[in-house]
Length: 313
Image (cartoon, rainbow, N blue to C red; front, side, top):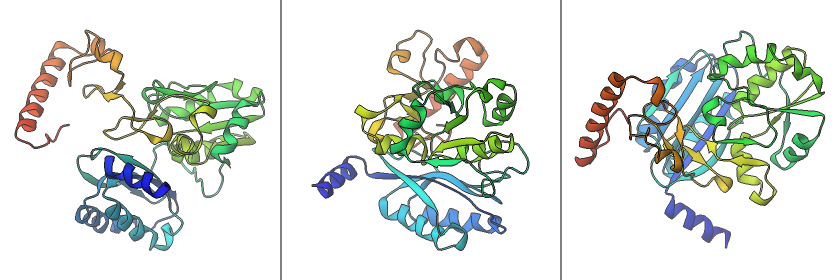
């Protein structure tokens, strides 16, 4: 029965999506870019992979066989032999192109000498997460950015309202109340931001620091909806925009003017115009901006009629 359900899911959602990251010292990371880019293109895989001295991070999508080839290629390297990934599915290809980028950090915090391989918080499995965050001695912190937390968050979690992950260290330093309880529990989409965030918290003198292993994605995959303490949907960095329990595709769309996720209700707002504005950005954009966005949207429509994808979508 399980095999039949898996086959049915694959047929309705033919693209396999793999989210991955691994902190490890990689001296020769620059030399990996071109062969990795070529391998992905040869196997119909699209998405983004970031390479740095501290490891690899990214999300890719493609046919099952193509994704497996890319993962096998990475795991054949000693540095990435223990690479873990999380899988979900998409009904349409959620990326427009394949990009392998060289970076200073695989997730940008902007704080020197934070190394999750040397110091990091304690992993908590999804099945044990509810008990931890329900403990009155625990402060729960969402390490994601404001446009992500806007559509979903764990019950009772503190939202730092950061625009970027670079703001997180200052937010911690300015919130002395974080020392009021003995336990700090942190989470993010797939786990990578928490690796650095918990390392940073430990460096700042916090003792009992925990993080959700596999992030929200693993929790939504493993914890039944009826037992869940998750409220809303989880923002993902691809054309699906959001996923829900069981990693089903959510109902959000993306405003291509401000990149904020928008709900079906927000689409009915008189401030919404496809590709031009939404209730999140209407009051912060000028008419000149909206004219430029309309021209871009017109080019997208023309490309769609010709059966091609516009490069700006």
